Image: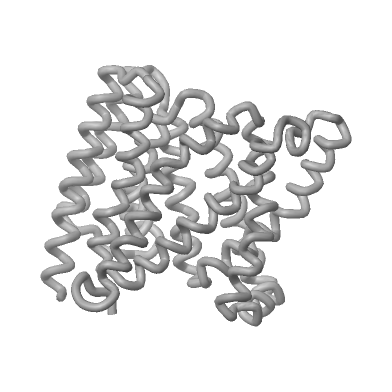
Length: 298
């Protein structure tokens, strides 16, 4: 049972907050290796994550589950789609951070919970409550205003929100163990990723072992940045109520928003500020409605 009081609640809270803090602060890490092209970085992240996850799965006693998953063509086909979604999400995120678009990534992950609500309605036939409809409408108005004022669609924000929302939807429908599923996803991408890194080495343009030792360490540690917050999140998700986890998920984009403004000095235009205010208002409506609904069903 997921509860917020009693044994394990503090551990669940600490694990969940830690996961979202890591996700929120990760732009600092990506900035440290901004001299490495985003495409090369993402391929290192895929390869090292796979090798990091193997001992994790062994320690969890899930090697048989991994083998069973690898022998199912249907599951492998579906995980191939989720692998492409999550890898493209990582690539766009890293590129955006390293090119001065942290605010856009923050907006994307503020929008993501509302995309999840919309996907649940469209694909899982979940009924949208009245206030959820209002929240989605407010968010859509904010995106429309930003598009109108800037004269262009906020592609980075919406791609991050929609791709991660689609990833979450498909993984929910698959109902796979998180670590095993991620290991299979990275395995499916490891061969082409490794081939690309070998190609860079052949051309003499690869960064690994050619820049400095710190860069090499950071590229290997991309695996930790992938797996550690995911494992922490799943610990917390088992120990806390859903509405609590839903509220805590705003930590990550809030931290990223603060980094963009106060650390990296990204300019916050008036249209962006108005769009953020729309999204914050939508999330407030969504959170209050979710909390009331959960309490009413408890």
